[in-house]
Length: 315
Length: 281
Image (cartoon, each protein chain N blue to C red):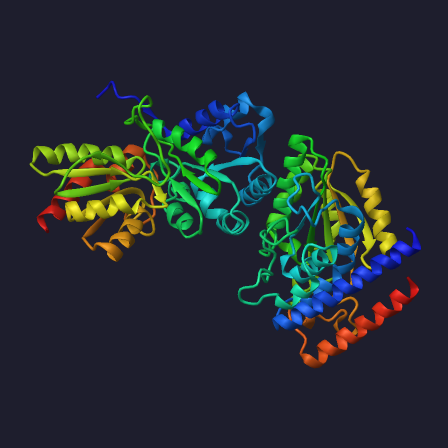
């Protein structure tokens, strides 16, 4: 697998902003003293007049973004997920969500794969928080191709969008030449009928690996890439429920309030089937290398495969 | 300032005060004290300084006002009604179910530039609007009105740092210094004083004004408009409940609606003041 290209979606974010700057002259970028880490530094270098550093003041940054949007600009407010969604939650809710302003939030360093910095920076609650804001769109891309497409889709979407990016380099699984991204539409990456794995972000690749392993054991697994958590593609979820009879969700986020919850809420209303949630199991993270942490917290192909086996046995 | 213009502004302000009382009374809730203390300020801004257009409220080049102390929405709504954005009679629907005049400012109401009400947030939004103006070389100005209690919120000082750093001289923040917040005197609750020195230390040009003297407001705002390279803070010394005798300087009128008797009394006082002013005009 040495020929697999890997890239962190935060880099895709910085590169996409830079590549799209000329096409969208109203686009401006805000950061809160993390431009080097969120990779908006790439944009800053190319377009210094369109990058505004707000300093270590995320609450104000979100308000400034709201004001820019109210005056017709398209601001990308960038910070770590912990601070963008966590610290600034109430400003995002009241100054961006309630007036439904055209602010894009670029939240990097989401999830446990932040690694060595540990629990204070490993945000596993952001999707849950953002889901509760009416009118908020939430995109959690799986790879470089999807992350870049998501940035342009966010620009073209009128209204607030929360884009979630990661620090860890992850395999590029979508072909940039043929990939089409549509907000709110999940992508079936692999057909299957014994179980459906609905995954998001870096867990999509793990789900594909798990499906391959399980195929060798005679278990047919459908893999759905749910890049948009909100609005949720209910059609693809309900089809999976009906046709596969059991669902496993996989996300680098708390099992409370994220993709797993969204999928469970959807099926329990319209087509109740068992939903097993793979994610961070209501616990804080800790320091360590990202790849080892992902394994330790069960955010791996091996753990997905285990849960699928159990789900199929229980059918 | 021309005496006739002052008289005219006083008439507008009196009608706005009547709108505030009417709104809060019919809503049976709301914040009359801090609304009355900014009635003259909003009159001055909407009738002399701001380029706004009731028949084209979303005009891109308009001046903007963010009411950061959003609980005083009745003052903003009454000022917008007096300016012609919607009928003054609509004040009677304030806070009613199905009405568009929400308890706190809502961006969908004609003339309201930003939803606000969670304290400390409006000034950041005003910074963003001013930054957009600078970014595009637009000529509009942005005003934001803060409470003196409100500036206890940390976000205000994040915004203050930001505005000075980016030299937002198209931004004017007015602090309504009536000295009272819900729990009592601002100096007893958790003092934000000295207010002028704080803004100065954050890199702002600071002026002080008598909030109920149009000549003084005019002097200060004209001077403020000539400031370049830094944002302006105007600390206006005001009287909470100004214009209704029994509400003046009473913290109990921060967030209480008058009963029928008090409503009649307040309206009688304002009607009398209005006829006096109209006779002089």
